[in-house]
Length: 197
Picture 1 (spheres, one colour):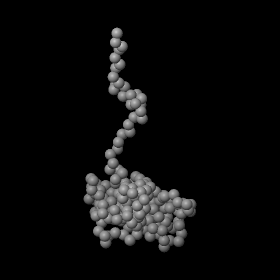
Picture 2: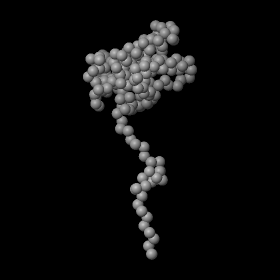
Picture 3: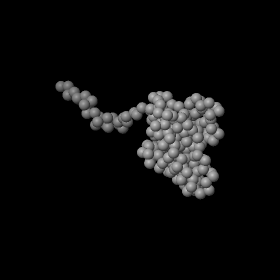
């Protein structure tokens, strides 16, 4: 096992899918403490063929999975834009990254961009720059180690969102109505008193 990841109880990998640049980030978790293991980007623009880009995504994500042995993968869901061709290409890139993780039986969680921004900054309308700055503060990343391309911090934000989401206590769903409650808890119904003579 990789020495970088041996010291953690849990490893979460985040992916920000893209067809020109794909971001990745890996978080190490010990209890409630989380820290950055690595973050970076996969440059794809040098490949002219869309299929070669997909092949490169598969190769690189497989390599990252083998290197960092994540327990879970958090991936940003493509947002719905007007350009159908762009969305199709982005969906393929996301699917190939997911397939690389699924080949190693890694569970996948998908988060909408709005959910990720909300989890990291508290505002669903936050800019990529604001997300990066909040990550720098939350995870104590030195300024000189911050990446130039925000795809890396977007991927890290997906991983951090997954850390927050999976740390929430699961609250059991309550009854839908009093009738529902009483039907599930007949022993809680007090016996009716008879009419007074």
